Length: 363
Image 1 (cartoon, helix red, strand yellow):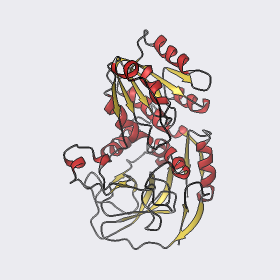
Image 2 (cartoon, helix red, strand yellow):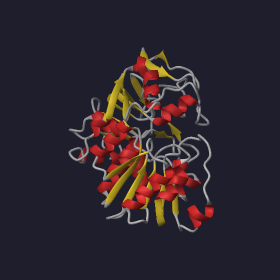
Image 3 (cartoon, one colour):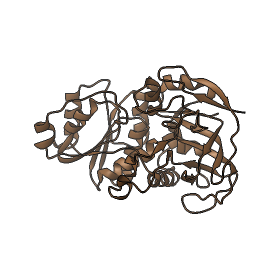
Image 4 (cartoon, one colour):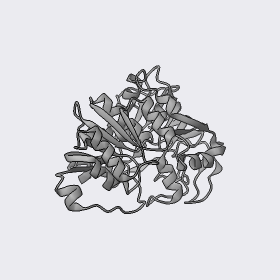
């Protein structure tokens, strides 16, 4: 039998359930879970902020595991190499992107494919072991599998988890150029990853606006030039502080990674005229925000770009970034706490309260 932590329905406490070991079909892979992250999305899932979730679910959309069993194959990783039992791998949590619909083929926006499903989010535990908060994860045929390079600690990868590919998508979309001043709103894993990636893309100055202090301390360890606490400043003070750091103009690029609707109009005002603003943190529906279309958008000649999710290219590149730049960015130091399967509710509570930078579930 296999034990997993299950989210029965919104606002219900997490509970342990046991499952039969699945028969591994041709092309599928069974992973023995090493660890999975606790993401802000998991908090929103428990609070019922995402539509179309087929509760009950096993949360944990990003995980790392050891290949324990492989169905008849061969089964190939994203580089085209055959997977082997004993490899340490991660995988793209998005499953079922068709590659044939209008969004996939014409718009080249696979993250909007209507057929896509997401491990730990839109795949029910009634149908299988489709989440990382479990002793095993079942990878269905067609799931994109990415081996971790030799020497990369799996905890270092999970320390940034889904935040790194999400941020990589956002920072790429932002077209950060050498010498740009980049403001990152939010100091969680997405924001911290965006701050690191902006530095790697040659930003001249990186400013993180967020809180609480435990996360701002992590931002400082990651080499940002300035931090602005939302706990001790007003919006007007934050805007003024950014302008003082940018010759009165504002940021060339701002990346929103907060998940708080009110941060969006503020981010528009933190950005200079004719600057670029990428909104990546509004993954769930937690309310509305208001802005002045003339002052905040049109007169500013502001370029606003929405960024949703990530694809297999973002995950593959994220693995390479984490492996290559571990000497520069102490990824694993972002891990505040680890929890076993019986402690997943406590993990959710701690993440919701901002008591952690990154929390891991280690079965």
